[in-house]
Image (tube, rainbow, N blue to C red; front, side, top):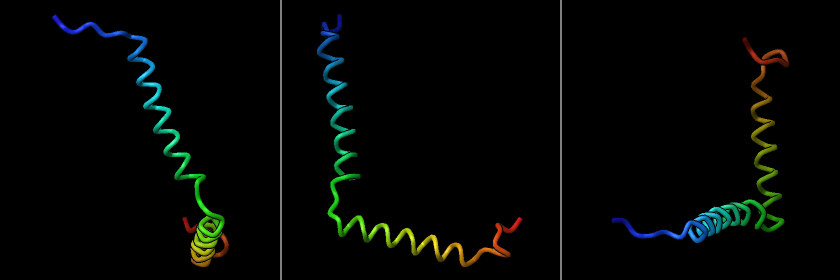
Length: 62
C-alpha cells in the first residue's frame, strides 16, 4: 500500500510553492532600481520609434 498523505499539509505546501513563484516573479518585475527602469523605458521607446519609421503611408502595409 501507498503512504498516507495529509491533504491539508499537501495543499499548504503547494500553495506556499505557488506563492514563492509569484513572489519571485514580482521581485524581478518590481525590484529594479530607478536607473534600470528608465533605461528599459528608453530602450522600448527607441524600438517603437524605429519600428514606426518603417511604416508605409502612416498605416500598416497590407
